[in-house]
Amino acid sequence: MERALHILTIVLGIAIVAATVGSAIRTVILPRSPSAVLTRVVFRVVRRLFLVIAPPSAPYERRDRVLALYAPFGLLATLTTWLTLTALGYTLIYWGLEDMSWTQAFELSGSSLLTLGIAGPIEVGTTALVFTEAALGLFLLALLITYLPSIYGAFSRREVGVTALEVRAGSPPSGRELIWRYHRLERMAELHQVWEEWERWFLDIEETHTSFPAVVFFRSPQADHSWATAAGAVLDGAALTLSSVDVERDVQAEFCLRAGYLCLRRIADSFRVPYDPDPSPDDPISVGRREWEEALVTLEEAGVPLKSDRDQAWRDFAGWRVNYDTVLLAACDLISAPEAPWSSDRAGDRSFSGRILGRAQGNGAG
Image (cartoon, rainbow, N blue to C red; front, side, top):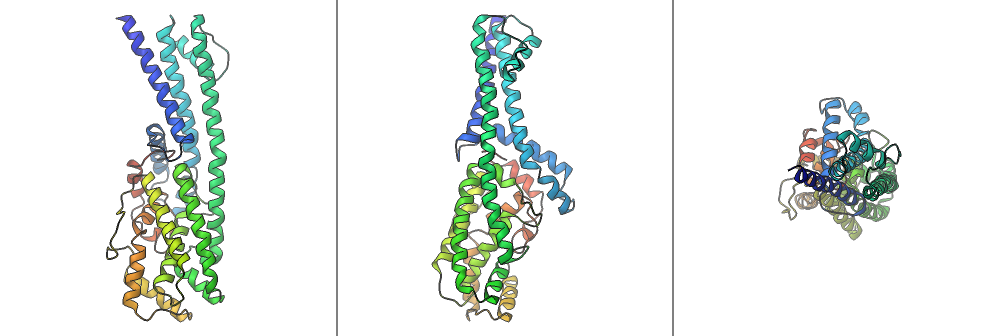
């Protein structure tokens, strides 16, 4: 009976270590990998703690300051969890293999994992296990350290675009403001370069924010900036230009729109956010026709040439917007984005982000 207990303990320890290593590999090394359950659980627990400190009812300025720490704290908590579970797994293995107490097994495991050298194996045959644990501890630490430059590189590239958009689309940004400013400066033809630039931005965001989902939750240095509201402003600007502004058709705007809604959908897939992958152009959207007409009135007063058939223009705008409406609002809710027109201002109850996270897939965040 005692021998069976020891064998069961060894098997359990091996399973814990294997699951921990697997979670680390899926989180850091494998891009767009299947759900890393352990990492997901860690981020969910950390998220709930932060929502207690900064509930949805708290002022936005306070929530922004607190939630800015969420992603970095989640990464540190993930590393701590990996090391703790590795130490626990090896403790079980040492106790099952050697004639020692639980305290001695824990001391040996902790000494080996942290390479302290304060305890050594009783049996010579266990020395190899001590070496593997020491190597594994260094591996996990190095893994997260090498993970950070990738995250901050993606964050830096993202924020350059977000910050530059303030000059073009205001703060908070909006598609109407983007068109208005380019027209006032007599640079409507140069919107083509905007669509090109933001198509590349969306492609980069799709790649980095699905490969490293933790970067989704890294907040902008300025409290009124957000990658989600910036994305919404550019998409709305492109949709308004194609549907309502009487200018020569720019296929690049269509490419930008498609890149944008595919980007938001891929991120939504990472967090298991439900949406209709093939919506009908007549499906309802969160932007009402009256809001759209008010935006056109502002543009018309500024002298922007508009299409005469308003009914068709509205159908065209809604037909573009329906492709990204749901996922845009979900992204704003997920990260508790600052208020911006036609995006986070209608994303609903901020606590929805917690419910989304409850279903989220944990490939590095959750």
